[in-house]
Length: 417
Ligand code: LLP
Image (spheres, rainbow, N blue to C red):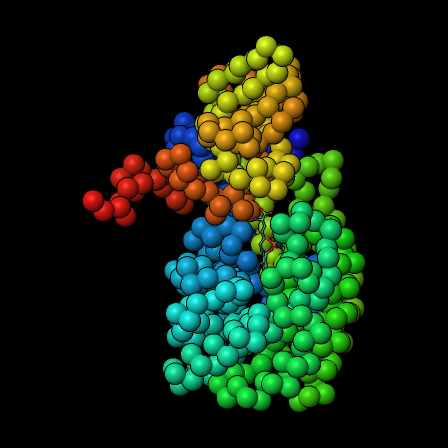
């Protein structure tokens, strides 16, 4: 069971900050994403505190949760943004983030996206290939601009995590091979419209062992040293995101201080600004997905199912990465059963938990799928004609609707006869 300052039981009822989840379900319906504003703020502060000894700039990785209110909460605390598409850039700007606090990533930026980000005046574009550098140079030249770029290196460090979310390995599409960097440095003089200001990496997501960061940072620092001898004036070393959170209380995440403890002494002597791009760390445990039990059923082999009104369309992580999410009763019963918690989608992979001990809630009662702040709403879809849920943000006893539930009209609005 996950119990925190932000989601906790009082009199057997699950509360977000000071608001009962039952109340939110009856006001806004289910499925419903519920986010604790305090959790967002405290996670950001904890991150900043851990790295305070290092000159750094934190760019929230918007892909984890791009709700405008979430982005704005961080922006108001001074945080920048890491975006991966023109759409995310648009969202960050709409949320009020200053363009010079936005960094633009992505292995396949379209020319229009490059032009849009240069037009906006982002801090830098992170280039992932020589071809992309050529494209940025050309687009910048056409616009009469000088583009500030960072080179994303692929350090060939295979971090232990789910294979779909490891990115710093030579097998993967990401970044420029570290071995190729000297050649890229040598060719850089031909780019009249580029200014090299950063070196960047991102080795994956939900990485528990700081040693992977250490191994990759050693390589990044060696390339930084080389860049200096070649006369480049690198201002930023970007370490990426990937810092872990606890989904399963039996597998608690390595504390952020352990990462800071290893990285600060390595990076401090470089004398540059270090950029971090945390996504999940800042948001994962700030939200739950509230869902109603529609039916309970038991089959002939005695297997019990709780069929709920949310599914893989609202949280695809168990289906895609076999991720563990705690599922908790909104009103605790004491008595438990072992059941599969499944959604209404016609796919066998549509489950939140299998063979899980769970409070024996009745049909019509509520469950909270925990740790749904990162990569849940942003990966939701309309598959099976589903309407994306509403999202609310709780701050103390205040509740704000931060995204309306989709409507049937919205489902068909872009289609033409
Ligand atoms: N920076 C870059 C360049 C990234 O590609 C990512 C995530 C991040 C930062 C933030 O990583 P974080 O701190 O959130 O681990 N959908 C998957 C995770 C995909 C991560 C993609 N890149 C999941 O649900 O586990």
